[in-house]
Length: 164
Image 1 (cartoon, helix red, strand yellow):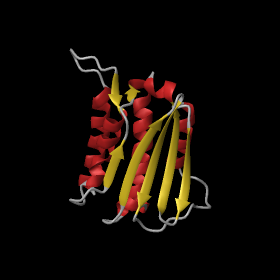
Image 2 (cartoon, helix red, strand yellow):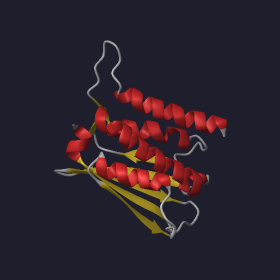
Image 3 (cartoon, one colour):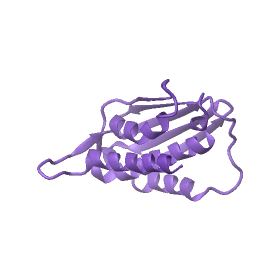
Image 4 (cartoon, one colour):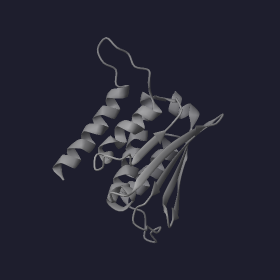
């Protein structure tokens, strides 16, 4: 457990390194695909086969929005590792993205995990955090589709908030 926690914390640190200025080097933005891949890397160590696929066009993420987006992706990954497709060796995760005129849409698709149903109880802290972060900092929303095959999360964000 300590090893997994250490790997996850290191991934968050590496995600910040993508965007944090270093002496003598100014970084204006990180690529969205790089940010997502770095954050998901600790969850792909269990199997030699590819369990996690990230297919994202070249989209810049500015420093101001990178931390919020990293926290949202980290929360989704943590939940998947606890309850979803990343909690079993046969589970897979596909992350894709489309950019429109004024929005960026990330699709998070989990397959092959245990059957999960939308909970009727009130949202936990993590769920409230990602809903509020998506709205307040990223100018967007997050929606979940709890199908028998696995959860599909759709993250819609303002292109202006991500890239500026």
